[in-house]
Length: 165
Image 1 (cartoon, one colour):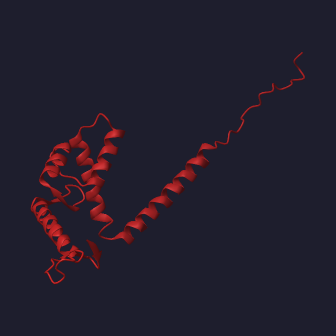
Image 2 (cartoon, rainbow, N blue to C red):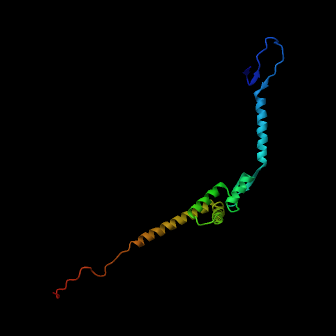
Image 3 (spheres, rainbow, N blue to C red):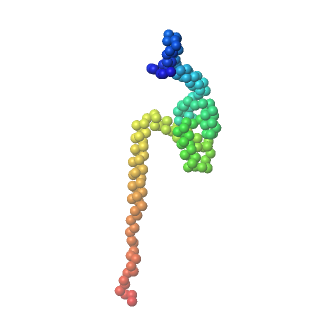
């Protein structure tokens, strides 16, 4: 057999050159394989659900097992990967805190962000710049007040009194 333009063609038989030959295309084999892969993908797709993060509201496609695993790990709240990492960092800085407290704290941060920054990012930038200027002014005042000017009310050298011997 030899291959020519994705078609498998057998050598000609010298005994009967006019016999019918079967030609099989590589494309048909590939289509059969793709069809099997498509069946597997549709079965997997039927098992995929959309989960919404309890903190930031981001939606992700996940399997039921993954949703249950993440929900159990985060005190009954499904969280996305980014929020999960933020919660882990919070717990590493505050090891005495429970998982539920960490999830609630991160949820509060996300809600504040959604209320302010997402609604009006320009105004949020203005507030941030105002806060930076205010802190800078306070720091300058603190630095200036820490340099206390000490005035001497009396000399540390005893006065020379000509009357005393």
